Length: 587
Image 1 (cartoon, rainbow, N blue to C red):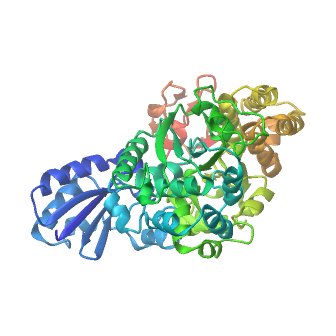
Image 2: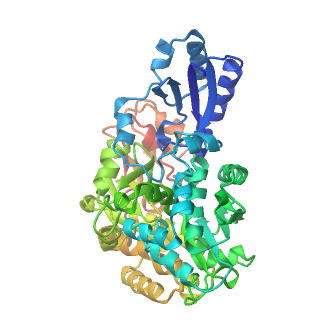
Image 3: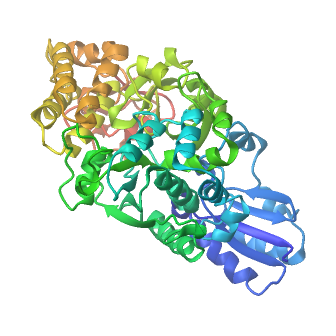
């Protein structure tokens, strides 16, 4: 056995930050050294510190962050000499406050992520992998499994929060010999990457959870519908399926119990609407992804009109743990209405962006400030967008809102799949609403008039407002149109698309009024409404602003006050950013 085990984080975030080069250098330098084993692991969730390298010396683990090729060379020398206390490595050691990022979490769905090699079924099994499946197939009936899931209180983590046991039981109770279990990995929310991280970092956990679900409902075929924009996830899941088949956990007569189930992957084209389960089914069948009328529900007539059950990746990622530890253990975490843990993707103006898994019942403040470290550059927190483009913006005075389905719903936002886009004082809330409406307008499948045209009209009004052409009555028109779209849309995309507009009007109405009445953007974000001038008393005539201006809109002599030609100014803000004396006025 090697003295040192080196694991390089190889999730998409790590690879994008340069982890591939770090691995290659290490591989070249430690290859052939019997004292060193080089391996990979997935994303541990601290995306803000990538690339991350863990070095194990026996049971001792050292974590190094923001690794680069220089670090890789230093580490190779350190393990060759048997001394990890080299000065060249100290600058890369993880700080104590960053260790708290993980210490303050409770990890179930992410329990293996960043700790095991996602391409090794042996490492997964060494971490209790497939023990829950073995227990289920050899000692439990489908009804027993569903009862444990019911006791756990596990709700669908894809956004709706519907009781998982109820969906499983409905599919199980539907008549028919052929049934399907489907995993919705079509993660389309801007700023959301929870499902991708689970598949890339712990694919066998997904497979095990799906097999347990398939056994519970009586499905002989399982399908993972994953967006094609997740190539690494597809590669690792494909390899995991092959390994599970070879080990006897997938296929015919699993573990000699008589239960058989095969699994395959369907790469979707990346349509946001395919996150809606009936649209996903249409896409699986080779049709354009458009929602079906319900009822009948998928549990009665789903994939190929056969009883089908659909849950998302995070939902299945909890299943094996629940069956191994008991439903009561999962239900002991969370709140009365929302049990267990929830994974969130922290993005935006946050110091520590990445993945966070916490028990339901924590507050937004706990996640954003206690774990996420607060706002970048010590700026003021303004709002957090919850639930992606279908969610809503929650303002600073609601930071102590408890994270569960009902409490978040009361704010006008939704839990969604778990995206948290954090915004600071520089964010224009009108423009933020416009951004999300631009997304949902483009992603609308067009099947129903309310969504196809209603979202477009909403986007047009918002665009007029941020371009300085807002009119009296626009706010009222937005509110009325939002209600119409919500009430008339066929599926969840249209029914929730107005949420960003309604919540920003609800909490930031003054910003809409300033855009419309004063032709001002309080956040100084909307270009059409920004004006740059130079305070002659503060200007030192250093000429830096003039040299930075790409259109020669600034004139003046050295050591004399400069002037901005408003007709030439393209409002790029480079002068404002470069001035060291605060002479550039932005209003």
